[in-house]
Length: 200
Figure 1 (cartoon, rainbow, N blue to C red):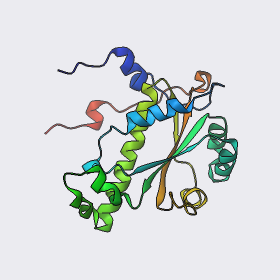
Figure 2: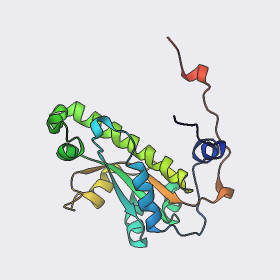
Figure 3: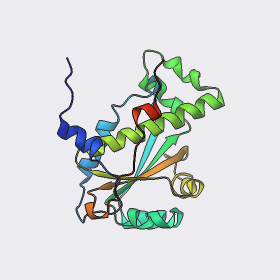
Figure 4: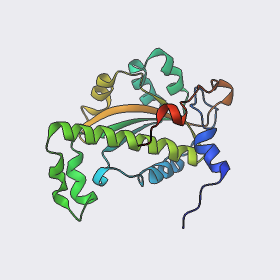
């Protein structure tokens, strides 16, 4: 029988978690980033297709390469973060289905339709990006997700000419580290259950 998480855990992951706008000068070791990934990968996706791909940006050289494609308001958030990850999806995700869904390797043909293929890739990579943020928060890190960037330019600069990444397409970006609480905005309102829900 499963038990609810403690209030402290729920506070850390949801109730008191905030989007980081600036970062403390504190390193995040690679082993912790790998632990975030190892938690994230356990999240559910349709037929276990796991279409998300992650390009982890740590070096100053890589940050400077990304800089021209960011909206002005996001530049410092990326440059000062210990890590920034481009969360992408693989246009050829179905090639991994025989490995990921071994009891029915023919499931790769479920995604032959172009619209079904895109919806599955984009929806599930977005889910995996959200799992990544929850995993990072669960491990004591803060997240600064953003969509303010030139997706086409990022895809060309970081994916197009690389053999491993040539079929990747960017979804959103998330900086990760230990946030500077002094730069956090006042929390914006949320919709109530009654506003956002209905029961039939």
